[in-house]
Amino acid sequence: MDVTELLTTQRDVEGLDLSNMALTDVLAAEPYRFVNCDLRRADLSEAVLVGCVFDRCALDGADFRGADLDGARFDGGGGADLRFLNAELTDAVFANVDLSNARFGNALLADASFTGCRMIGASLTGTRGTPFTVSRSNLTLADVSGCSFRKQEIEGVRFDEANLSGCDFTDAVLTDCRIIRARLVGTTFTRTDLRGTDLGQPDDRDLRTLTGAIITSAQAAAILTDRGLTVL
Image (cartoon, rainbow, N blue to C red; front, side, top):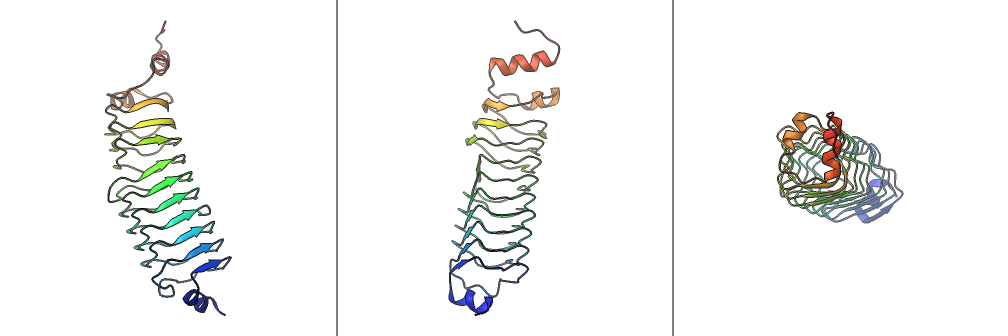
């Protein structure tokens, strides 16, 4: 049975090499469960993938542009340079996925969640819908400019050197997070609880942006000591 025939007759697919294949017109408009499949550089653009599961699949360079991935779940696996531009990702779940340098421009991420993901250099700016959530993930060098994290409880996220320009953290609580050398132009921290966040050594411009945030006395002392003041 060739790959095309298998995909038209089966919905649980395991260990299949689908790399470099054009799959949009091959897949049925029904939920598939891909387990340990090789989907590197596969073309899934404009595909109907509602409710599909991608379990520990290799996804380097996979093209999901314009795909309908509402309610889809990605567990483990992943890879660099995935493209989700203009995709529909309402209620999508990403758990322990490598999303390094992934592109989500103009994707609908309403109520999508990212947990335990490697998102170094990923771009989520310009996404649509109600805010997505992120926890225990590495967003070093990521671009999330303009995104809203308003009133969220964010745990274990590394935002080091990320572009947070124009982000809204109003009333958010950040625990076990890092915001070191991040770009903070126009970022809002009104009533943001940063007591569990490593701020590094913010410069004077960053301090002005942090106006309204809540920090500990120890954090304040470290900031002042870095400026040559002695805190007793």
